[in-house]
Length: 184
Ligand SMILES: [Zn+2]
Ligand SMILES: [Zn+2]
Image (cartoon, rainbow, N blue to C red; front, side, top):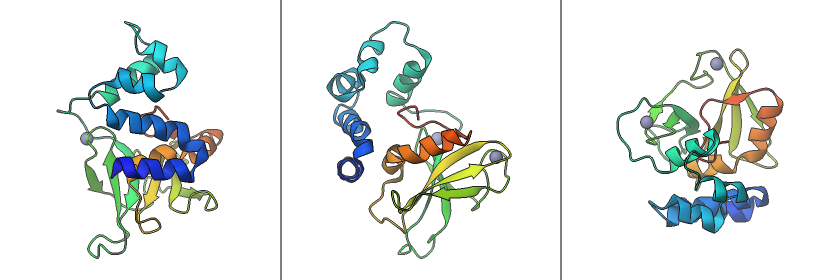
């Protein structure tokens, strides 16, 4: 499902093609991040993943890509809303953990960091189903994926394609609550 969605997004969003190609390579080489990086990773990573002491962002990428699971405190990577054909949860907002992908219900329009009310930003011409949920008081944001607007969306894959929204958020002085696998 993740692989199929990544290929679909690669076609739909040319700006996300390199990220999706790399993501597919990671899915196809479980347990061998270096092989996936060699095949489809950005040039700087190819050299950096081989260093005994890789720079901080690369170390973080390796940690995420090779995480074996285990005890941790869940941190929100993104939020999503369930599709309308799931009557008990339709429209309800859930957060997803960046590490274990566990999801939990969370109140709509509240910041997961400080609890203040958030503001949504959308560019519906580009993304019919994704928004920035931004908190002005703490200057944090995350991407929200609305499965009601795109039933085929796979939240953790779609979130990687939201690059123009991430760029816009950065221009607004916002920082993502938890960076995604690609460090964005
Ligand atoms: Zn977790
Ligand atoms: Zn906040």
